[in-house]
Length: 83
Image 1 (cartoon, rainbow, N blue to C red):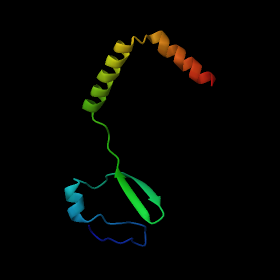
Image 2: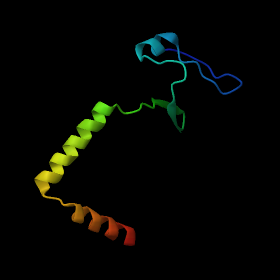
Image 3: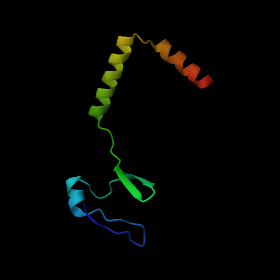
Image 4: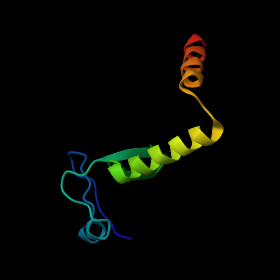
């Protein structure tokens, strides 16, 4: 646990030990969530192509296993657009 403070410009310094531990670099982007007296920073990370390829492979396996055809998907899209 570390202690930091808020600057007059609304900036907060993330202590060096934490930046090192989490491999944070200058320019990293975060989602900021605030509720009551709690602030959460969540690092935004671009998904790797390996993860995308894995997801695509699993999706194709699921579609094949369930016997879903292109026409099924097109029909589902038409139904969803009407609702």
